[in-house]
Length: 111
Image (tube, rainbow, N blue to C red):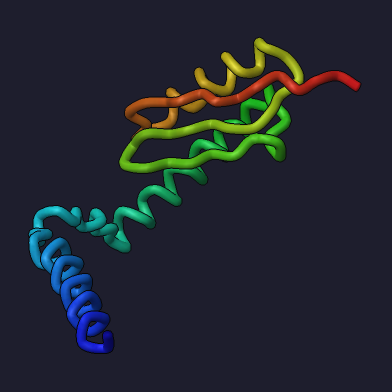
């Protein structure tokens, strides 16, 4: 009985290890390498867009988050009116270094 159990356990481990061995290195995709300079450029672009929004005085900037990645800017958060969504996107597009703007702003529910 002990011998039979040992054979079953051995077979189980042998078949499981084949699946692990069969996986190639190309099956796991490495994460993209982020450099300090690209992170700094993204932060600078986010700050420039936020500064432009503050100077424009058309939206309530504390409720807006700005995320930049390789020239693509995402605006998220809430504003008072639909016109502010469009205006914020227009302001962001005017900032030097912005290639595209994803406007994920929403109109805040009135209480």
